[in-house]
Image (cartoon, rainbow, N blue to C red; front, side, top):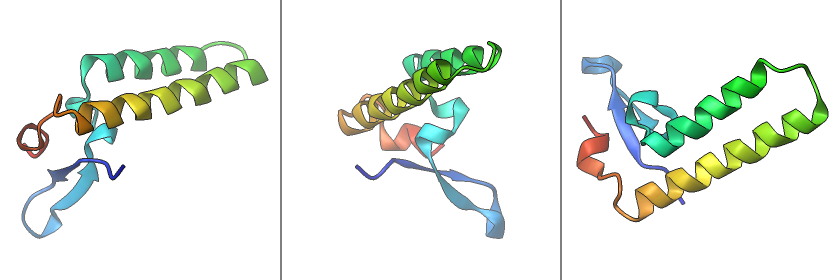
Length: 80
């Protein structure tokens, strides 16, 4: 699925960026997963924790796919 894009910048410096990568555009559930991934960063290094972070990030992408494909996040809202 192609991610929903948001406009950033002004004038000639304007560009499009994936909604799912803009923290101010994330839905609460996306933010919760992001927070969990960041909390794991504070733990000691361990391959198992790295795997958990990878899986959480994959789930966050799937959640973003759902939010964008079902209309939970509207394109007009994302383009502000």
